[in-house]
Image (tube, rainbow, N blue to C red; front, top):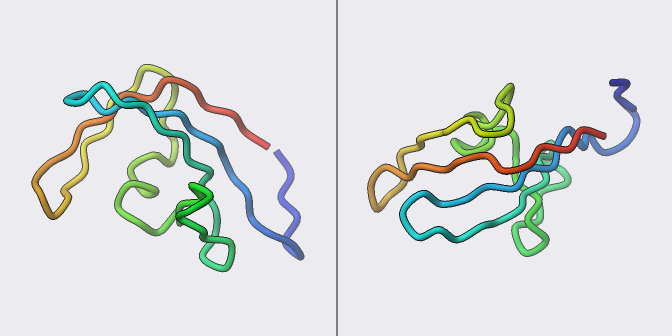
Length: 80
């Protein structure tokens, strides 16, 4: 994968399933200047962003959130 260092650092697009609620959500992992939570553009520096780096489909990630631990299963990963 080549990275354009002069533009936005768009690393990966992930589809996750919350293991408790069954809800699915898609995120695009981006560098800080591109963060837009309303468009589901999540910083690679957030706890969830860091947990997703290097993971693949069917991997589980667990993060600590203010309401307690959250567990997600990765349903889809797209690199661009």
